[in-house]
Length: 147
Image (tube, rainbow, N blue to C red; front, side, top):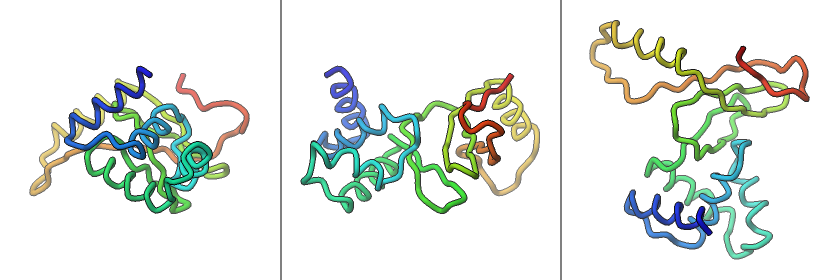
């Protein structure tokens, strides 16, 4: 029940009503580690929530992205994936399996931010820096790690 209260609070903070479909979809994103598509979210939630259509899932995801509660993750396959983790992090994207794995490296983000602070970029204000590393896992059964 605690996660539901957190979701209601997060929705309220950005001025959104805490409707049942929004709560269900945001909850699924928050407990998911695999950066799901709208279709995969719909497949999971429709078991207990058959009245929530795929179209509603797409619309709610757009509202959640626009409100800053979640982010869209682009992948080479062209599918839209979603992430409720809004803390600074990057993604490893496996071209073979389409799996996305989060990674955290404060040193790397510090270097990137320092680089752009030192450079003079005219007529452009950086709002956000996203890092996605595309590649192939050597052993598909083992998570990618930074040593």
